[in-house]
Image 1: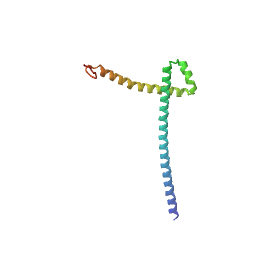
Image 2: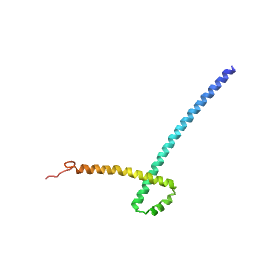
Image 3: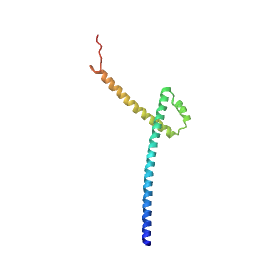
Image 4: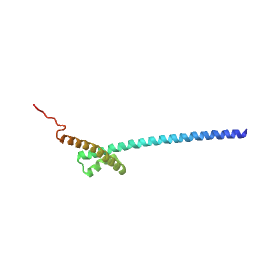
Length: 122
């Protein structure tokens, strides 16, 4: 009888331990998913901020010193600033490349004789 109670208690403890282990694994998976989404969102924000910084510099014609002075109030660490500018540069180059490719395709199509040209005859 005593042995049966001990076996039942051990079995119950093992079941609880298994439930705890499953709960821990489930919570860790969820934490990793949340962390990954947060990192992706932060990266997109840094990309947008960097692109905006580079656009502001390009449109205003600021010198490097003026640009550095303009960025100072944002209180970004050197690492974050570099990250923003690098990601912004990547975003700008990927946005510009497809646009240039489309322009190139359009100019090739319009320069072909007899294609995509309308003639007005009266």
